[in-house]
Length: 181
Length: 66
Image (cartoon, rainbow over all chains, first blue to last red; front, side, top):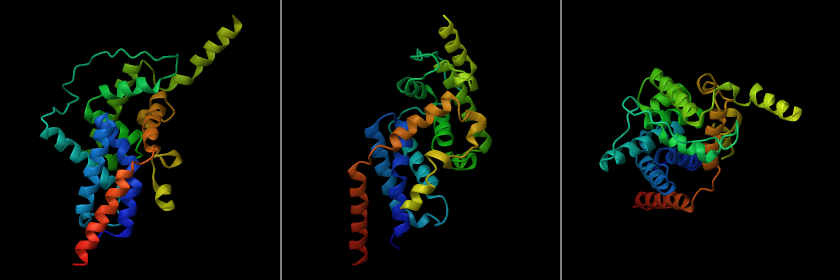
């Protein structure tokens, strides 16, 4: 059976998101685009196994993720395991007080173990629910939650920012103080 | 297509609020995360992908008409 028009337009519509997820996994636009290409070809080949009406974006993310890890294994790259990783303090200094530079953020994101990075991206940026992210990563919902939580804590450490007070009273107080001077 | 755009949760209001409890939707980390991601999402899609889908389509048509 040929792929339906709806399936095809779903593929097309998912490309920007697939690229963003792929870049976050590979840190490299060329590798990311190759990964997306593989994903589209695989998805096309197995369109019969996609159930219309279910979440096509999540289905595609699952294919992309599987492809990424199978390539990693093929090339003998070690898949980082967050439990065993050394906690190295990264030299990232927020360029201005309370303002994070995007480049600094990228550097910090790279330092995260793969499992934590993908979890925080899927939940915090791709817009998936915990259930969907768990499905994509093939793990329990609780595992995703704890990975996201650890990722956030780690990013806060690396970037030297706190949680909710980032643009709260502190920055206002500083402004007031400097005006008074 | 418009429908797909609207359904795509990666930008704006469609984003699930569930993330707020752990990441902190308005925290610096939460905002940077979306900025990082949305920057890539909004990039122009390379031509190779449209071409790839066209090729796959064509290969399928050729096969089906045999």
